[in-house]
Length: 378
Image 1 (spheres, rainbow, N blue to C red):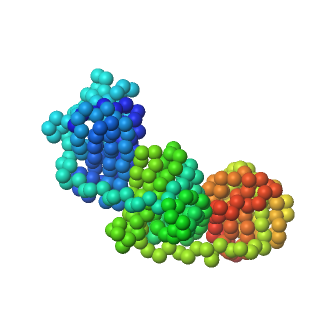
Image 2: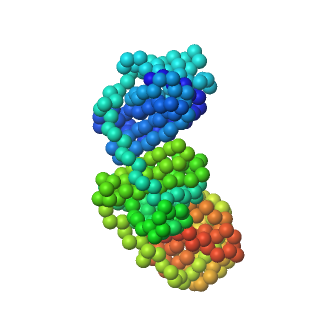
Image 3: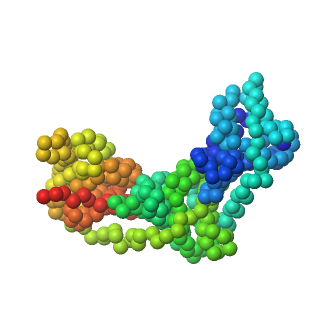
């Protein structure tokens, strides 16, 4: 095998393909990146039995072939090379990397022991890469991080004709985002539970492409195990789906409220950050809404205390409610809107956070963030 490729192209491709390689691979070959040189193309692939990544770039191929080398070592080397064309060739069980006056010789791993990458399922439809990345980021923030509850570490992807609904929860908040896409077949209906971290990394990495193709193979559909694939801009990722029953969430979102408050988001975020400085670990920030004003408080008794007042519009009854400040701040960041709308039923029931493009505009129904209050003692 022998090929030439631009240094920046190689470095970016290797970094992307190597990002999902396991830190402690169960077998040595899984630490490798599979390099396949064909006429005019170089493909780099990584796989850990859960997630596969494959990227294809242009290359000047002199001799076709396939080789397996340490992914992390190749990533470190390609990132540090001078900005010159890179020539990679094989000599027996060694790989030589030459760039300008730099020369590296690496051992290879046995290609015949490397597992076959899963086949990309048949494309189910396409969506804008930018919109998809933003939507996934909004929802993944609410996904659980406790591996003992694997169902809650996923994002539920519901496909219903031309609409995708993404949902995630860690039991303390629930994020839901709806977006439109172009299905390959009208009337399509499908559900998948995708690991949140993998989905977030994948959506971010495909953001540069115009469109992302989504392909879904459910268990028993002829595609073997449940699998979802994403492809765009010459990059392809597949991941195994999580199993388990995701909470039924639509009935959790209230439709009638006793009070609705609107606050300009930026000063609200800064005020919550300041007041929460005195909130000890796992203690809440208290929000008291009256017509025209919001009072934020944290700390009590002999501890440090903080109070701040903000302008706020309130329709309905006055209300005092308390939230985990981190969850509130993550929700305010996720709505990505100039104005925040908080809708309440009572101080002990979940509040609904959504965004508005302006004070006078209607709330954006595409994204909703339900946040559980913290019960105050006394």
